[in-house]
Image (cartoon, rainbow, N blue to C red; front, top):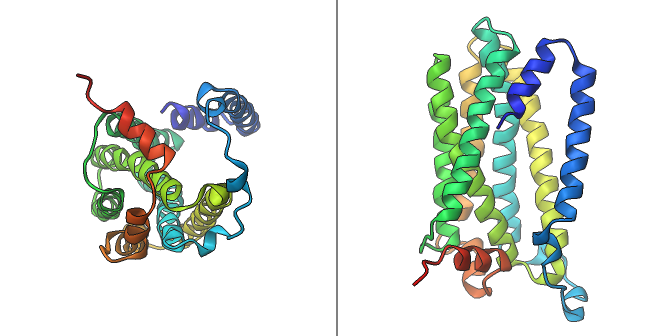
Length: 264
């Protein structure tokens, strides 16, 4: 949550090299902590049969549609990364305002993830995913009509509260529909597509936001990019829904449901 504010402070102080070094150190420490954490080390080893699974994840029913959803989310991440600083610049502010706005987004995401993990929803994962993706798309339409920094900060906080739940359900769906022997490849595809879409969102937003009156259109482009993702997840007869129905519950979904089950 404090990351955007710290970045803004370091940039304002003219310490870009320190910022890059600090980012590398924090990323390295976080990677080591994750790799040595209990959650990772407590995961059961996959059986040998699972490791010998011959099909690629791209051939798994429902997974290509999940890549479409990942591309939509990645595009929104790229747009928000450029559009928010452009909004701050348009209001005659330095990087400080951009840091505050991005911190509002990050804070909303953290709190939204905590709240989502504390509740137990009975709706199927594809339905939850479709609703969350639709809400993310709608939030960008809201961003496009806001002109005051305080209003945008509130909207970013609320929109950010949707991001972590959407990513959580996305990962749970991949874990459910993809066989164990192909999950590492599947998550690699998901990250690769998301990063590529983020880069595309960065580029398009940079071109659009520089034009007079282009910033609202940048937000609308992000919302429009989510439409294929929403349609892919929302179709009751679609490949994601069919695959989720026919597959066994994933370890992620099972752990989440058992951890949030009320105690007697």
